Amino acid sequence: RDYILFDYRGMSTQAANIDARIMGGELGVAYNLNSNWKADATLAYAWGKNSSDGEALPQIPPLEARLGLTYQRDNWSAGALWRVVDGQGRVADGRGNVVGQDLGDSAGFGVFSLNGAYRVTKQVKLSAGVDNLFDKNYAEHLNLGGDAGFGFPAETRIDEPGRTLWAKVDYDF
Image 1 (tube, helix red, strand yellow):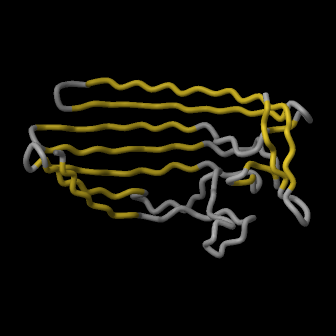
Image 2: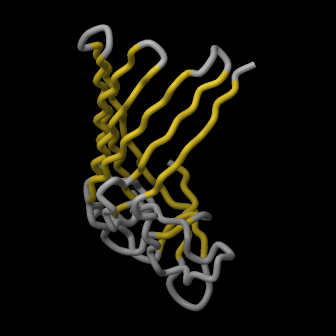
C-alpha cells in the first residue's frame, strides 16, 4: 500500500507517500504443433489505483499480447512474433515515479518481427532478423526517453525505432 508518487506538474517536482493498489497477471502457453512447429502466446495485464484520491496510478503498462510461431529443423530455425499492445487511457498526467511520468493517453499498436538462425557448431549459432517489419510508427506508454540526458524534453513521448535489421553471433562455452 505504500507508494512514493512523484508530481512533476508545476515549477518543482514533489514526492508524496500515498496508498496504492497494484494488481496484474501474466499468462503464457506454448504448444508443439508437430516435431518442427511450435506456437506460443502470452498475455500480460496490470492495473493500478491511487487509493488516496481514487484516481488511476501512473506508470502502469497497458494490456499486451505476444503471439509467436517457430519452425526448427536440424540446425535451422525461423520465427515470427506479433506483439500487440492496447492503448492506455488510465493515466495520471504529470505524475509518476522516479524514472518516468504519465504523458497522457497512449495509442495501441501492433509490431511484427521475423528472425532466422543457423547453428554452425555446438558452440556457435548465427542469427539474423528484422524487427518492426512493416515500419510501424509507435511509442511505448512507459517511455523513458525524456529528460534522461539525451536533450529531449521530459514531457515528450519518444517514438520507437522503425524497421530494424539485426544480426548476432552466439558462442557457448
